[in-house]
Amino acid sequence: MRSDSYLEKHFDRYAETFNANLVGSLGYRGPQLMAQGLDIIGAAGKQYDVLDLGCGTGLCAPIVAAHARSLTGVDLSGKMLDQARARAVVTTG
Image 1: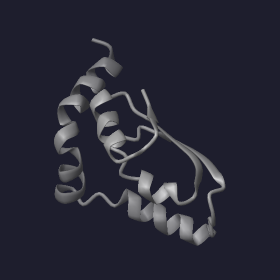
Image 2: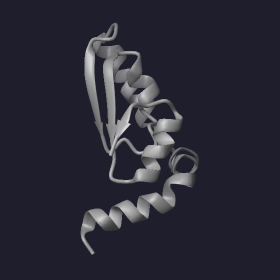
Image 3: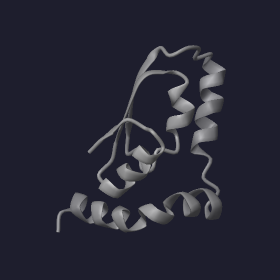
């Protein structure tokens, strides 16, 4: 089995509980740290075209969207992308 196929299947199975596990159980703070970084550099307005590689369920999208002229999320897992779309994140496969 190709590694990308394995990862796709693994994360497809994990998509429904991904946010709860990542944020709740593991204390993931990526979006908060990204917000702090954008505040530090003074990223005002919608000036960036953002490509979120490995966007997963789109946890960072609400933070980045305030600074993005365009926002595209990409992930191997179709079910992760479904979760991101439900968050109103513009995504592609």
